[in-house]
Length: 253
Image (cartoon, rainbow, N blue to C red; front, side, top):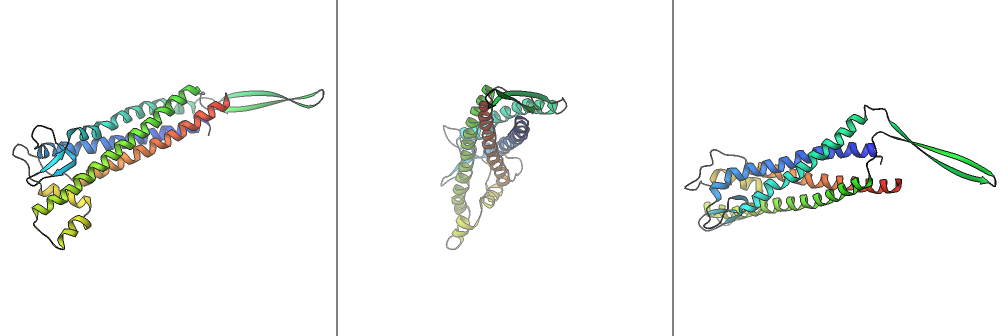
């Protein structure tokens, strides 16, 4: 893979990663802001997070505030990182396409017979100025670290989503005193989207909170999870390209 193609692909990847990271951050922030006062009914601690909710005999409580802080603001580090690299590689790709291509030659003397030498000249064309190998090493390391970071963020998001979903299934048993064949419907047939739909319309505000309308909490969180999933997958692809460029720059030296 030559450097121009690598930078073109990285520019696209970083743009998409910025978008999906922003989606994960914004959607989780919307759900958190909508539910935080309603769910924060703990004594002595902040439990305002829509993720990692907990069923109790008397009320439904949110998860620790730290989870929502992490899920909402965690992707912003990745977004800023990608925006900076998008500007850098995008600038190089954009202006290299308008500039005349540079050429690099390398000559090698080959010996055929005693006293006979042949001069072989190889001409390679570069559309962007070569970046030092140290740059690719640094970016590759940051990409790998960001991939791990994004996977952890995605895992926390998914785990918190399913924890609240499953705990609210227990809450529905209290709100609708049913038994027998109805319980498998709540615990087996209803998707988490359906569970959060019940939560949107049946979970009452606390005495000191008013949500001010309804949102589609399930869809909002699912979009955030999708954004978080694409974020780590795109970072994994960027890591692969950066590592390949480290290897390619090493061969050139």
